Length: 252
Image (cartoon, rainbow, N blue to C red):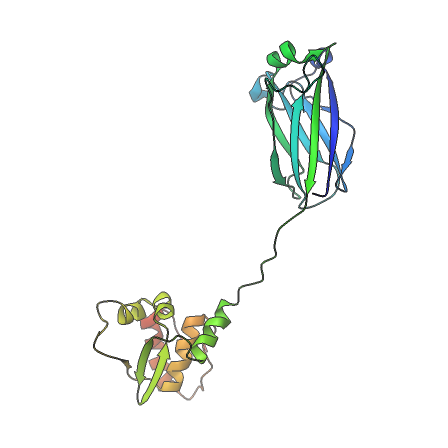
């Protein structure tokens, strides 16, 4: 907790009868937790939708602050001057302020007829406003590095459980990652096209080094590797292979 403060707000109930719907009575500013606050009371409600039947109460952040968290607790005193618990309209709300919203409102804090019958003394109603400013416990989450992590797993053959035979080379990969990236891979390693008796899936018409780069790029969504412009036949095969796997073309 960064700080707390109690504001005693006295409303001239007799005078409030002459205030139009949407008219406001403001408290003095109060400093709590290093910020300035103010209580705004609308004796006949802040909007015409309430037909003047309710008292509305706002807590307004006066300071130019951002991401302030506070607890706003409002209750009223009975005719004996003691806190009332018979009709306690207690509000405990934790919220954050932003640039677009500098106040919090309880539009139907209390019905005016109930307030007049039970809580007006000498023509005044007293509201006790407790403001508690709490620490911002937001944790900054670092950007995800899942892409590079997946690439590291593939580069070091950690946890691989799928094998691909490309010419004379055997390339290891991860079934779950491949299945998530390509429906064709998913069918080959998990679906009906998977051969349970085969230890390696055969890939034709592509060089092992190029296939390994394509596999890495497909799993990590990184840009596909550059190829020499003279390798037109290989480029066509790569495009055909990529379109079959993940519906994209070589952009290197």
